[in-house]
Structures are given as structure tokens and as C-alpha cells.
Image (cartoon, rainbow, N blue to C red):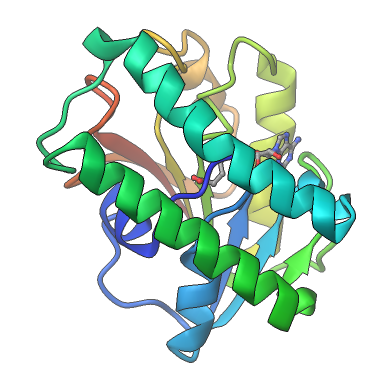
Length: 213
Ligand SMILES: C[S@@+](CC[C@H](N)C(=O)[O-])C[C@H]1O[C@@H](n2cnc3c(N)ncnc32)[C@H](O)[C@@H]1O
């Protein structure tokens, strides 16, 4: 359950301006929703982990910080540092993001909704923009093609305009997801585009999927 920062989201999703409403789906301990809400956006985060009692959520988020750095140390050849500059800068961003998340969950719990793909607890077209980082495709070794198709259709259902997903490779060595091209052909009524972004950490993971209604 990672805690990426607003700056990482901006780069991963090549965001310039935010629309009036945004969903972060599988938000984990990310600081994006807190920061977007502070900027006046109707921002909502959804994640199954928000079912956890408060103290357990705090503990999970805090424990995930060193665990995440440990994975990076262990697979050093799978990562590049040109975006972060240094491991210290990455740690700093993640710790700040976790603090931001934990403060906001305590102050504005309604923004943090428990829920799981492929069935989200929101009405059709509730959000102008839907973002999803490091769940779909990343966990293609855990979730199969059928799950991905259902999850993509669910993200499209709750979006009014656009869905953006990053990254498009599997966790670990960053292998491509074999079923991605055929999956996109099965989506009904949306335009799909794979777009380069100004962010790379996992080697070769510098593209997002944009689905437009
Ligand atoms: C690697 S974290 C990414 C968190 C955040 N997006 C970020 O970039 O820091 C993946 C998150 O997906 C959540 N998750 C796992 N299965 C899920 C599902 N079926 N639907 C929605 N979220 C799920 C986990 O609880 C975890 O918080």
C-alpha cells in the first residue's frame, strides 16, 4: 500500500490542470487526493484498505514505506533515478505523501471510500477524470485478463470524460502485459491511446493508457 505524492501523480499522468472532479482508484496511502482537494477539486479516493480500522490503516501505511524502499534495493537493476534524482528524494516525497494522506483521512474521512475493482460504489459518470496508478497491469501476475476487462469497464463507467492508467507493465522486471493490445480492442464506445509521460522509475515504464469517452 504505497504513498505516492501529488508530484509523482502529476508526472505519471502528465497532468497540467485538474478538472472539477477526480477519482483516484486504488489510492492506497497516496497524497494526491488530499492535495487535489486542497486545490479546490472534488477529489475522492477509493481503496479496499479503507475498510481497516484507523490505527491499522496508519500502521499499514507507515510499514509500507520501508517495505517499498526494500523492494527497490532488492531489484536495483529494474529502476532508474533520473526523475527522482536520488533515493533520498524519493523517500522524502513518499514520507510527506504518507503524512498528507494520514492527516487528510483523519480530517476528511468522507473523501476516502472503501471499495474494490471491478465493482466501485459510485454512480455512472460520477467523476470527470479517473486515475489509477500501480494496480491494473502492474499486478497482471495476480489479476487475469477477465478481471482487467471488467476493471477497465468499471473505471469507464464511473468516468464522465477520461480514464488514465499508469504504468502499463508488470511489477518486478517490467515485462509487458501480453493481453493489453487485445483488451483495448474489446472496449466499447471509448477511444484508447497509449501516451508517453514525463516520468520513469521502473525501467521502460514511461507510458500511460488514456481512455476517452
Ligand atoms: C501499489 S498500491 C498503489 C497506491 C497508490 N495508487 C500509489 O500510487 O501510491 C496498490 C493499491 O491497490 C489496492 N488494491 C488492491 N486490490 C484492489 C482492487 N481489487 N480494487 C481497488 N484497489 C485495490 C491496494 O489496497 C493498494 O492500496
